[in-house]
Length: 228
Image (cartoon, rainbow, N blue to C red):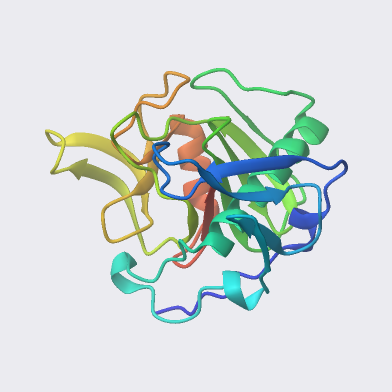
């Protein structure tokens, strides 16, 4: 099994203006906000219950066997890093494609000249996904993450299995084209209904062509970051 080292991309930490964000530690919106971070800072820090902690590249790196989807990072540091990269993805989208939002079932794509490893970043708050090849943003799309009562986990995940067509055993054999599994619970990226708001049972639903595009760029072990 491929060893995955999810190192911080320099471009993911170069933010043009300061921004402060926060998210719930339990990831379901029921508890008070406990973690915050400055998305405009290059510092690898987050604040938890009023105390600021530093983290390193190693703290947000997955190393080892990823078979079965058990080797994920859902620590405070990993979730802070995913949220930072989601903020950067949004800024990169505005700079490259000249848009501040993407309509349901729509996407942008331009991979000309890009080379390197693939990385997918998801923003739960904005219901957007950002695709990178190397340090270059190549695509952005609307998404649908977990509806109320369900969970889309935050953190850093390696793609551990890919299926060009999967049928959900849990949900009436529903088709899930271009599925990329992220954890042992069946959370995945896949093409599916994309109404413009959070409506899934936990997976990240994508416009079909965008799902196909990123499926062609990723490998087993490619990094997916899901941020607040």
